[in-house]
Image (cartoon, rainbow, N blue to C red):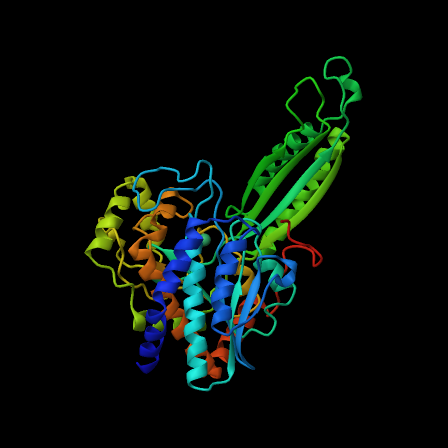
Length: 472
Ligand SMILES: [Zn+2]
C-alpha cells in the first residue's frame, strides 16, 4: 500500500508536466525516425530527473536510453512517440476533419504511450532513491514503431543484452495485460532493372521491369494457397517505371510485408517469395535486387511478468473516469457502425467473459484477468523483438472510446481528452508498481527468465541479416 501511495504522489505531483508533454507531442506529430522534437521533450524531462541520457543510440538519431541507478537487476520501460501519415485530425471533434491537410497524426496514441512510460520510469527512479536500493531503471526511447521498426535494431545490436525484464503499455479500449501474440513481420523491397525501348517501334529491344513486378505478384498469388492460412502477404508498388505506356519500363520496385504467427514461419515463406522474384526476373530477362530491410518477431507475453503486471493493474485500478469522460466517449462511440462495434467485441472476447455487457458501453472500466491466447489478430509490433530477447509484458489501458480502431481519425481525435490524460498517468503508476516489484524480487525475475528460455530457446531470431541498418 505504501508503494502505491508513493508512486501516486510522485506522478500526481508532476501530472501537469506529463500532460503538457503528451499534448505537445500530439500537436507536433512526427513520423518514423524524424521524431526530433518528441524525443527531445522526453530526454529533457529525463535529464532534469538526473537520468543518464544517451541519445542517437545505435546511430539512430531519435533513439535514446535514459538510465538511473546501478547494477542488477535492470528493468526496461519501453516508450514510443511516432505518429502516422495521413491521420491529422482536429482534437476532441467527433467528426472527420483534418487539422492539417494530408498531415500526420497520432492515430495510435504513441504520444501518450511515450509519456505514460516516462511517468512510470520517473516514479521508479524516485523509489530507488528514496529507499536507497540498488538496481537500474532504463527508459528506452524507441522511434518508428509504425514504420521502420527500431526495436529490432536495438535488440540485434545488443542494447537489451543486460536487461532482466521489459515492460510497456499501449492506449486501448480495454484494461488488460496482453496475453495474445502478434504477427511476426518482414519488410522486403524487390527492385527489377530492365531495358527501355520504344514500346511500338522496337519492343523486341526492351526488357520490362514492370512485367517482372506483375509476374512476381501473380506468382505470389499462386503461392498464397500453399502457405499456412494464418500467413498474410501484402504488397505495394513503389515504382511502376514511369507514366508513359509507350516506353518499355526499365525500372520498377515492389515493397512487401510477409506476416505469420511465428518469425520462423515468416523466414521460411520469405525464402519462397525470393524464388518467385528470381523467377520473374528470369522470365523477363531483367535483373532483380532483393533487400530485406527490417522485421518484427511475434510477441511472446511472459506469463510471470504479465501476472505481476495484472496484479498491479488490479491494485492501482483503472483510470478514474467521470461522467464527462463517458459523455465524450459516447460521441465517438456513436460514430462506429454496428459491424465495427461487433468486431471490437469479438476481439475483446478473448479477454473478457461477457462482452455483451459492453454492447452499449462507451468507455470500459472493467479489468480482464490475464489470459494466454494463441490468437494473433492484432497486427504486428516490434515489442515482439524485445520479447524474444528478455521476458516482456505489455499493458493495455482504456483510453479510447469502446470500439475505436487503431490508426483511425477517431483515435487521433481522442489524443488529448481528459480520459487519455488520466489513462497515461494511471499507466505510469501501473508500470512503476510492476517495475518496483520486479526490482525487489529477484526470484520472480529468475522464474520469468526460465519461462522465457522455455518459450524461445533463449535465443533471439533476428529477422534480417546482422549488418542491416535502418532506412531513414
Ligand atoms: Zn501503436
